Length: 110
Picture 1 (cartoon, rainbow, N blue to C red):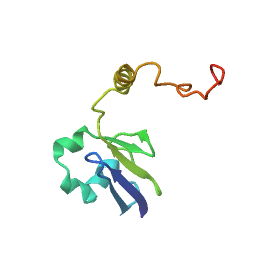
Picture 2 (picture 1 turned 90 degrees about the vertical axis):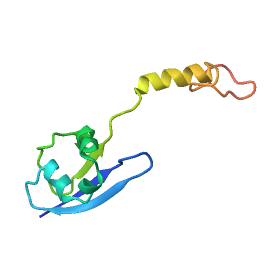
Picture 3 (picture 1 turned 60 degrees about the horizontal axis):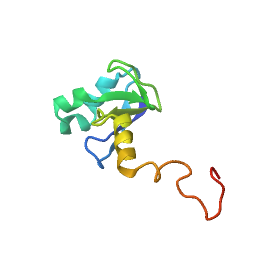
């Protein structure tokens, strides 16, 4: 028997964490079917999620090992680069960056 932690965030600010005791050689897909999470997720939601083990993407057929942390990740709704550009445009150049707040009388860049 192996011990695997299943972690998923089906919606924002909601985290599901469950410890599973599975037979050796269990795949990612089998682990999800055994868990209680499979019943609460809609099939289309489950298919859109990307499985990962300790933050690295894996396939649904990947076998799990003892102590693995299985994570199900939702697809991104906004491209991070686009979000950063929009945030920079809203804030302006002076309010962002490493040296945005300078002490009185300090030299530029310090």
